[in-house]
Image (cartoon, rainbow, N blue to C red):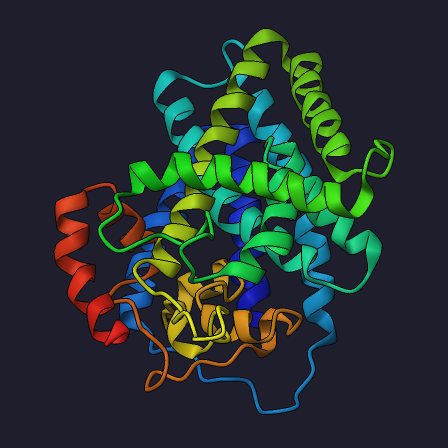
Length: 335
């Protein structure tokens, strides 16, 4: 818990300092989330699994704190970017990237953790984080569609062999939105007051309005830009963690159960902590309600990525390089 708390809360503090004071802080915040993370992954060996049956009550507390911290960090960063004269051009660029990476790596990963919890208000906190970046529908798409159809051809958030990220990006966003809405409509029918998509739309509109009230039209534009960047990072994570891995279609017309070999994983120490063990993806799909602190990793039975997820995200922008790195590995696990 010390590792998770120190790494994630430090990222939040650095971004807040960057927004408040500018100066050297935007550079420090960006360096911490990027280069420092990469070198720490190289320097320190992977952390072993927590002992079987161990519990970490502080894990839920940290996740809740991070969920609540998201809002002052996100909107505080937007105000800092929009207020004339507060930051020079270089620091605005540095803060924008650092803020977007914080939302994309920490807030997104933590919201994912929150929407899987049993407490209703905790789940709503996770949905609110997604909704604040205009991605509320990911809550429904992830729970109602992805966890049912993961690693199958119909799943919009499972990347197929040979599919570029750019093709996946549009297919996943639209497919998740439409299939998530369809799944929720089956549950709630025409009851718009209870239908989650009503609140995703209203909440998203409220988020844009709040940014505009806080920092004018420039605040709304910075909010839209930051949200877009953060959404791309979430979809990059989906692309990376399921690329080329497919469940077999059985003779009875159903897909085989989700197993350890249907998601990619990484053992890297620092980036795994900053993303709350989202990199231990096979065990998450096998046990969706298992807290991030207790997720297991078996490098013998689970596909392992050659680099940390942030580094793989950079590679994914270059399709030829991505296919060179990943296709033979995916084909080996498919065989």
